[in-house]
Image (tube, rainbow, N blue to C red; front, side, top):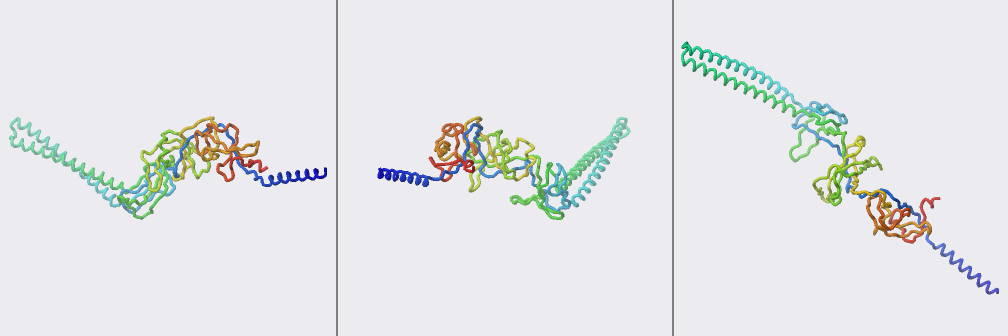
Length: 384
């Protein structure tokens, strides 16, 4: 009996030792973050491959069409101007004097034409009078011919004088056009973004093939849109009028509702970059654009297709080969599951088969140590 009791004690001790060893060698449960498989909206979207930009609907980089010295600079950077306002004027006193001379010459030509035409009328009356006298035999045929020739000559002098007056008037138009080329006016209402010039500085227009800085950069700050490069493969499914979302680094996580306005009719081929198509989108809510500045970096997400009330899960839970890890609360372990995916974007993936509503999938996929049958616990519960 004593021997049997000792043997039983040794067996119990061995079993306890094995149990303790297994407990000690058992891997500690992994702390995981999970998300519910639920029903909701899933969209198929495409986004730009490189950063896009906010652009003003109208932006003009202006310079006078002739070179010269800045005599008047009527605006400052940041100042609002209206269409037609004078922005700057080059030195043009020579053209102003030429304009005065042309106007004086036009006045003189008009007076000369008036005098010539009065003489022509007088000559015609004289010819008519002598013609009546000729019928009564008071004047000779030769006198009649001379009077009629004089009337015709005077009429031609009148026409020539009037033509000369028109030439003088046209010369005023030419001088006025040359004078206007020294003045720079605002083509639309906007804000002066940049001025590259000061009083008395000399400015020149850009020669052919050589770009120079514009004197005035004018931006219409009442209308903005976003232009972004979309990969040529993704661009095939985009149509004007499609819904889109705009995100801006300057506004954090905020998203702006937008609509596709234009898809470029050509593929942009830039060396060492993927071929892209430029897509433009406008803000649905016009008030959103009031907060913007031209040049902000922007991202454009275009909705190609959407489905409401479908089973979905976070896209970051999907592993290569459409596999996911499901957390089994009853057993406290992870279980690998293969799914059939439907629509997908960067945020959600539609679950067509393989999961049921209410199951919990592990986030993010691919984290080291997350494998099938691995013991785990939810992060929030471990924190308790």
